Every structure is written in structure tokens, then in C-alpha cells.
Amino acid sequence: MRAGLAKYFGKLATLTEGYSQSDLKSVCSQAAMGPVRDIKDIQSAPLSALRPVTLDDFRAALKVVRPSVDPASLVNY
Image 1: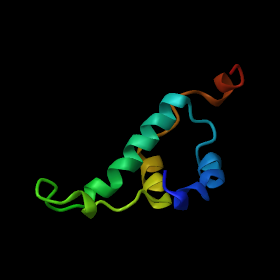
Image 2: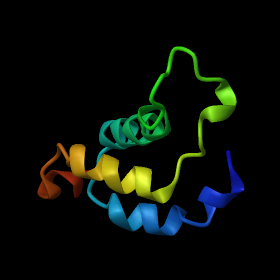
Image 3: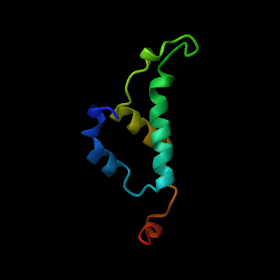
Image 4: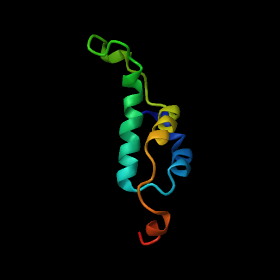
């Protein structure tokens, strides 16, 4: 894990409050695709062309992935 993202764990926890484990997995998958989507010619790009995942990638992912569980249901867990 990149140390730079660790400082944002508290912020990420706040942003994802009410998300299930499955939702969080989807958020992480979407965020991880952010750097890949930035590459124009993915087939010929070197691995070094991938930038690190950032908090902005997570924010973008949260616009796509919404909580799938009713907040009242989360009280049971």
C-alpha cells in the first residue's frame, strides 16, 4: 500500500459510512480503475505509466457506487 493514501483512511471511513463490505469492495475496484482510465493507449503503455490511486479516485468511485443496504438494516450488524 502506498503510504500517501493511508493519511486519508479517516476521510474515506467518513465518506463510506453506511456502505456494506460488498459496497466497499466495489468502491475500491472503481477507484483502482481510475488510473487505468487515464491512460489513452492502454495496450502499449508501460506499467510505469500508471499513477497511484488517489482520494479523488475514491470520490469519483463514490459517485458511481451507492450504498446498497438500507441504513436501518445496518443497525443489525
